[in-house]
Length: 232
Figure 1 (cartoon, rainbow, N blue to C red):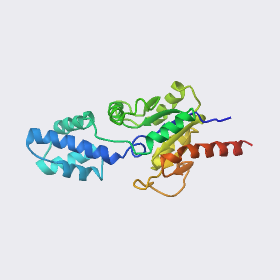
Figure 2: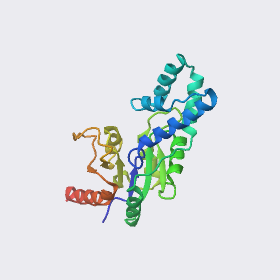
Figure 3: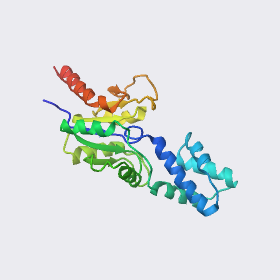
């Protein structure tokens, strides 16, 4: 008897490339700045975003351009960033992989640490609503990281045990710390263009690693086999 019945995905760099969202957000902010101040800042902002978070990148970029920048401008630009309709696309293997998992009678969802409104905008742009059963967000209004609460919410609303859940992330160590601590099986997708942060296996690493979503169903079957061996 199969024990896994739910597969939950991280969103960025797992289902779509984060760099697409960064590029899209920078273009939206640059367009706003062009309409208000008549200046382009896309290149400078995207370069800053490559090495730091968006808030810091904006502060650095516009302090450099204006010599001084007030928090009111940064807050307006963050609002533009978070509310814009992003130009992003799923990785080519995602839709097929989700269809295969559906045929395995798996429930499907996403879980994320980003702000709920921002993630809903991404979900709509990716047209994921009709492909998934649910979405769980681990950030509260203050941006606090509450991924553990999100997994427990998943357990209640999906009416399943976390031992029956597989989490798929893109390979950063932090992706797997919380789910593994809760007994969730983990799979790391290490795409050629998005390598894992470290090849070393540590207690926070995934149970299995794949290079394409097309291999996910086989990985889940292998996890089932491993679980049976350990239980025998």
